[in-house]
Image 1 (cartoon, rainbow, N blue to C red):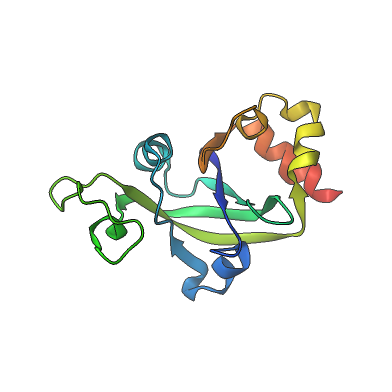
Image 2: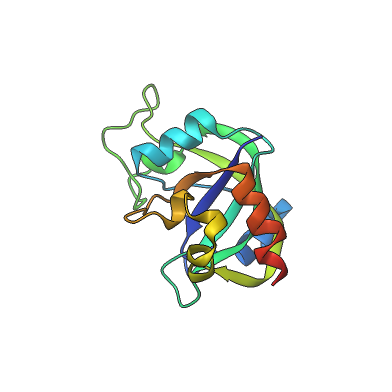
Length: 155
């Protein structure tokens, strides 16, 4: 099993939005970064766990946990001329962008703030806390995932 962190702006789509979706499941559309796409397309597998991270908001941090329930397939928004994610270079025969489906698992009682993640020596090598890290989909080591879930979530 792999572990991940996926960022979303809560005014666009929050962990509560995921929880309130039919079957508490949603396709993760709109990723337009090649490295993030590659993680979703090539490495994210069914039942991998995901930290759901709220970004660009008042309370930045990890809001809860989701899991991958469907492995990668072409993102339909790349073909939709009315979508803000439309890509004129993408074709049905040669899609450029992929997505996965995630399902809500748990909402934390309180957001685990980025500041707390940065203060934790156990997380000093976590991709998220590295200078310049802005990737919307990123891997998390198992020991980092467990530390955040078990230690930081209990504070």
